Image (tube, rainbow, N blue to C red; front, side, top):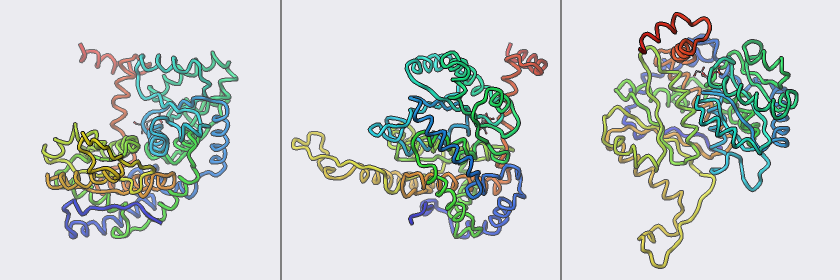
Length: 447
Ligand SMILES: O=P(O)(O)OC[C@H]1O[C@](O)(CO)[C@@H](O)[C@@H]1O
């Protein structure tokens, strides 16, 4: 079986720099697996692919079938880790122009991810497109109090209750939240929604392999059993503490070496548009995990060729504080051949009979060498294929590498105290009870 490849031959790092990390990696590996490191009450994702709740997994499959039969649109309400992973899977494994697996073999509803902005225009437009469609909805929030999804859910719940009646709406609403506590758990119990659990020991950005990601992914018609198979195999493969046999830990080490050399920005680059949301998910994972205590690589992303024509100049020739991690798909799902043209007015006959994937591959090779020459170290992560099995493996690869990378950096990769600051200020400015004196102080500063 082909495995995810990690290559760093264009990173200009010497063997002894890597060897230096061998022992440290072993220690951090133990801290992750024995759950003794910082943030150890949020390490449930490490062995989740082995011991997830099989009964809940069957309920997810049943719920997905019911949603498929009764809905044109499935709305997923959530922010950050509550939606990015599912969107990543559906974009990677679905159809490019429809957020379902295949327009022709359409059985699954279209999926709308909402609850991650506060735009009045956006929600008016959403209501407009929902008018003639049968809908089901899933609200995903561990705390149940995150303002953006909570407002979106209130708007949509009210809309659904008016349209389907309170009981009819309850039949179509699913809640994914804490097992016992929180505002959403209470509401779901009172309204009688079917619920799924975000485990206590799994944080939002590490939750894609739980019901959080699996329900929307299953509704899109993607094989979630294969995703969990991939994740389980990744657990074994990336569960060895020997740096030299573990590409996932090598990625973590290379990031830290490059960061130590002043490469403070990591750009995740891809040549397949379907990887866009994998990159968005990855940015949250690494940004929230490592950006603290005045430290952390800034994770950014680019989509080539598009961004070669916007960011390419800066990457090639700007300030040398960047390294690039290219995420490739070794055997893309589909291909198309460039036709011969008798007149050849565009001069492209030299490409006739070549496939687009071949051209894309040369774009990747040419760019990697140019950027390396320009002082941008290149790492490469090669996904053998875009299918559910390798998606599960890739998610686990990035999560494990992130835990390791955070521990090597000396931060707690499983908390996000900084995110609370904006939430608190927003509550205070909106006049939430209990935040009066902060509200007064902030309004003074805004005068
Ligand atoms: O699931 P909740 O509690 O609504 O939180 C949503 C998101 O907010 C964060 O806590 C902070 O951005 C993320 O980690 C999480 O994915």
